[in-house]
Length: 271
Image 1 (spheres, rainbow, N blue to C red):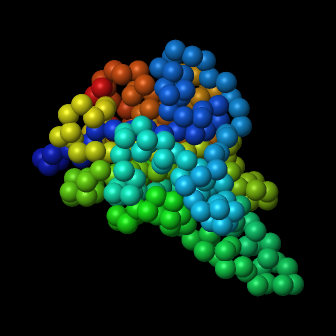
Image 2 (image 1 turned 135 degrees about the vertical axis):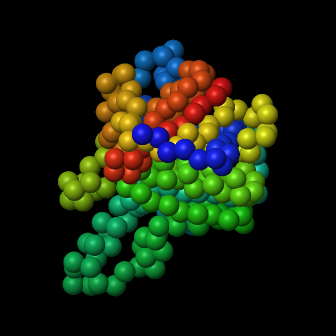
């Protein structure tokens, strides 16, 4: 079942991609793996320190924020864009689990005073705030969270903003494993971040085109490589891998991504 509409499809060109995950340091390396040109070798995710942040802020942020800023800057650099001018959409299934754990430890102790730094890092828009500090961005910023469907929800939000004339929109998706004992309830295989700089569909030659084909109850696409398929299901942000695989292989077609319970997102991709 696929829903249809007489309205023009939500669509965009992807002008830049950033990617950091297990065995992936950037989109250039990930593209060769997803295109079938190189084998994937799993390795712990390496999260860069955001040099654009002032030293004091850099010391305060956790790996979740560093990951978000890292992939965002990759996508901006790939597109040759000015980060300060871009509207942003941040999407994460759970935010900063390590900070949440630290707050819970304090609340369970005799001294229940929580540091202001811990508190402001606990809000869901912490990554958005630090992105603004790092880049000087003053454009609108939105934060969404939809459990395992957070990438699809973020992409929908970014496409909708683009259709409403927001101009180029930078989508930043990021997830990081929780420490014990929280990880027992919400396990993730490793940290994974992805950024897509979406520009209006009219910008010919600005990269592959992605268009919303509707919502469907068909199963989400799977990856043929067992290791990559385990990554796709092992961390929410990696639910985007079937879309990235189709982009890497530069072939037109439709991919189906996990969204909400029994409802998937169908996307039409054109090189």
